Amino acid sequence: MKSLSGLKNSNTAAGRFRLDNCADDKLHESCGVFGVYLNDPERDAASLVYYGLLALQHRGQESAGIAVMKDQAIDVRKGMGLVAEVFNPEILGQLKGSAAVGHVRYSTAGSSSIENAQPFVSRFKLGSIAVAHNGTLINADVVRELLEDSGIGFTASSDSEVIVNLIAKNYRKGLEKALTDTIKFIKGSYALAVLTGEALVGARDPNGIRPLCLGKLPGSAQGGSGGGWILASESCAIDAVGGEFIRNVEPGEMVIINRDEAFSFIFSEKTRRAVCSFEYVYLARPDSVIDQVDVYGSRLRAGEILARESAVAADLVIGVPESGIPAAIGYGKATGTPFGVGIVKSRYVARTFIAPDQDKREKAVSVKHNVIKSEVRDKRVVLIDDSIVRGTTSKRLVTILKAAGAREVHIRVCSPPVRCPCYFGIDTPHRRDLISNGASIGELCASLGADSLAFISVEGLLESLEATAERSYCLGCFTGEYPIPVSGEQR
Image (tube, rainbow, N blue to C red; front, side, top):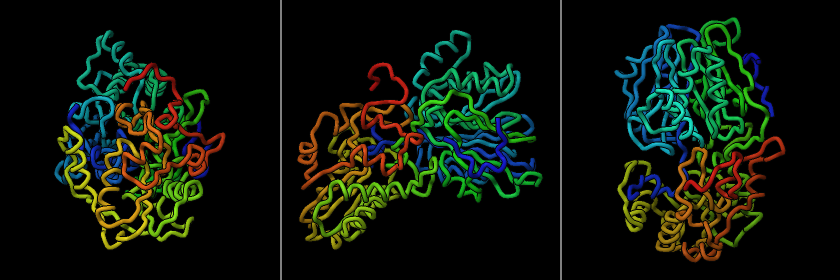
């Protein structure tokens, strides 16, 4: 067990498609979590969580929720939609308390519905708890059945409700014991922010698949007044509320913050660190730092490595907004190819779209992206993207670039081919819908209509992430090798 004070440098080793699915054609995160514990009991935690969730909006756009603790009781508000749609000043004004947790959701386990919106709250004889969960449990069905057999009911289909019910069931053993027993029982990926009547708790799965970090609010120095602590999925959310990023929560670490102290301990045996590599490729905001690796810097390096591995003669390099742009800058710098904008992405389109066939999916792409014709006309263009999943976006972009007058379009991709499903918190199409599954690079290039196509190698991706023996990554969606055994094909 260790104190959290002064640890700034103490890091250790069916027929329905969302528009963001069909237009962005990307793998999407399940959610983001944010928690605040304020030392001043009269201060308002809900507004800080609100701004933290706004900074994490990219991690989930289906629902948002905030749970607040005051006088040993937890009040919760949640709804479908973006953070700014669910919450307004009146609602935030009703959420009074000095500690709170919040959540933004993109469903991967359980349907998109208000019943599955988080945080989940359980009120029982010994108190109340709220849980915000980022990740996916691979043994949720087994645990759910055991809990139901013991008389515990469920109101939602999300695997996250399993966690809150397990904690409530074990709460008579005390907070720490209830939490450690719960965490040792569940398997999969998780970054948790748990609120009780007495503490704010953070925990990260033993492999560290999903990110979680720790921050401090001004005035929280030891012996001082005011201030407080922050738990967040990404460091950019800590910056958004004026906090100081302290460090990442380690894989297998639990952080407990209460009125008297803040401390942490490792709850699991040391295992292989396997941070999700797709956090750096696409999911995380570029201004975040995850496990000591700067996300923006990793994308720049990926572009430079792509240039080394598969450079092609061209007049212009452009990136697919937004996450392809840093890599395009790196590629251009390494090859001497001028960098340009080329493609504009609309930020003001609806988040849901009924697209029952491929033709409508492709039309949805044209809503999202348009070409600056004067920038690409009569030029050989290198198009840098972070990934190719279904291929819908890539094919459409090649088409509109050539229609705008580009003489050649060469696609370069900052991740290896996505050939396998993810079981640990990313919304992945069925294996049969992954365009790279079972196809050669030549076949893919022809199907997309590009003049050439190349992906970064697995070794190149690891180099961009500054991988070492102590800093390793989950590459399951690229290689099919997972950090946790998965029984059978689930997708």
